[in-house]
Length: 197
Ligand SMILES: [Fe+2]
Image (cartoon, rainbow, N blue to C red; front, side, top):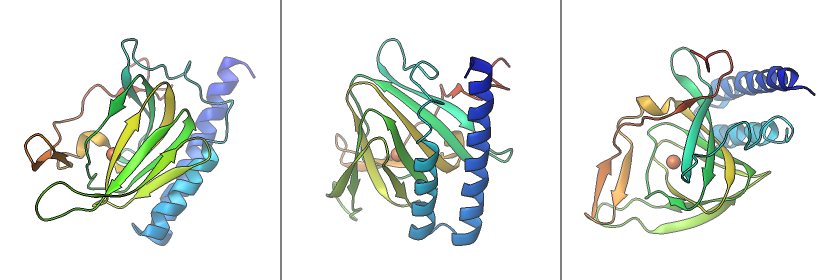
């Protein structure tokens, strides 16, 4: 498969996936069953090992994570990203205010889950190592943190674009309180028809 064919095939696979995810949300709603079905559909997409690579979506040169937007509806719903990481990276416990799915492709991303308490640090309830063939799915109020070491390429999908999620909360262990994430910026354009704009 040459480069142009790879891009065309990848776009078709992404489009088919998004069509199915929209249909799942319509059919099952934002429910445990619904987000689990979305996760399973993304796991299926991620089985196309020849269509995605760290070369296509390189991590930052100075380590850390890069987010590439690879699909998003005109109304900013159903936002799909490639998270390309290298080196150590962790987030605090946080919610998303919309449904969220994380699916593995290459490398490992440890997801820890928490239970919100009225006061104090949220205790961890369980964890899941996201890697090829697996994923996690969250409802809008669910809490997780992510922990990466080494190179990893994962898919992150949200019910609404990250830039629109301005009420996402995280627990600051330093301050012992919940805070809002600062606005997201620096998302890279991974859609081939828009990448040169
Ligand atoms: Fe998250």
